[in-house]
Image 1 (cartoon, rainbow, N blue to C red):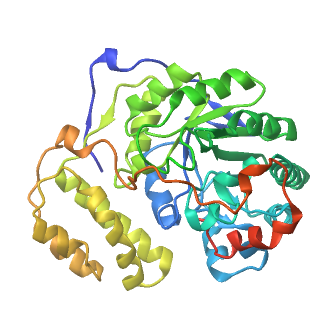
Image 2: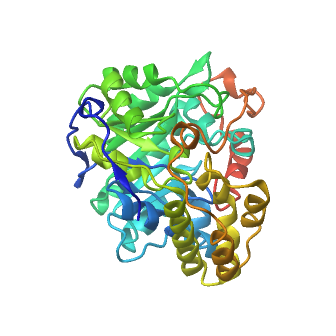
Length: 394
């Protein structure tokens, strides 16, 4: 689908060994980060066609899953070609998390389960959930331990994803990583930002190196944050010693990034550098997959709208055409609009770099008195449960 060029041989720095997560061995140590409204079956399918890795569902709350809400069941659905099947859970209560994991295991709905402790969204953290939760060491330990025990019943590896901590004065990642390792998780992913950082500034790769050094080879450590190219992934692994990488915003509008990563991490210099016509074909295929996913053309094509700006970042597409593409309502209309594009070569740096969410640092939204103690106060459990009211924590 896309053209391939070969950078100079010196640009390929290393060959990276496969990543093992429990019984699962990945030929390419790359994981797609769950992104609400993005990493549905259609997008995972598209990324999978370009390269190897582990492709995780959108984050789903354990409560919604236990209650079998239709949206949660749609989120965890996998097509037969999706192997290994990976589901990310978000929760705040050990009992509910345990029930959700047991459901996934007993009903054979996953080959890998990840727990999210990295969500920095205020509606979640103000109730003590997401990236705020590891501050309460006992609650974090209870959730992870319960989840691992339930997953082990079915031989399913369970991993955790987290942030550095709440802010510069309240880091949690070293002790949380140690707790998770001792509970028996199969891998730990660290986003090199705090809750307060949101998606601002530059990710702190040094924290990933410190976590890897702290845990050694007792458990795989995956790095996350500011990987926008294959070379970024190579550099993160070289400088931090991490065992794999987690890709989020960098692949928005660039599903071929997984092909680049697979090539780079296996020692190949081949890279995808699509021209505009090839990007248009990827957009059309993504729209088709979304229609399949929703089972209704309008909803599928409407979901594609959010991806348009990411796909055409840096390419010579006029503002009027961009606007019409961002309001497309049918595949026929999409075809007509894409036909208006003139082919153009890959624009280089203009198409690369940061995309998706960019924000300024903000004071974290937390429950009153949350930082006073690292022990969870049961009297706040009602407020904490409110963090899990939605289907997705994101």
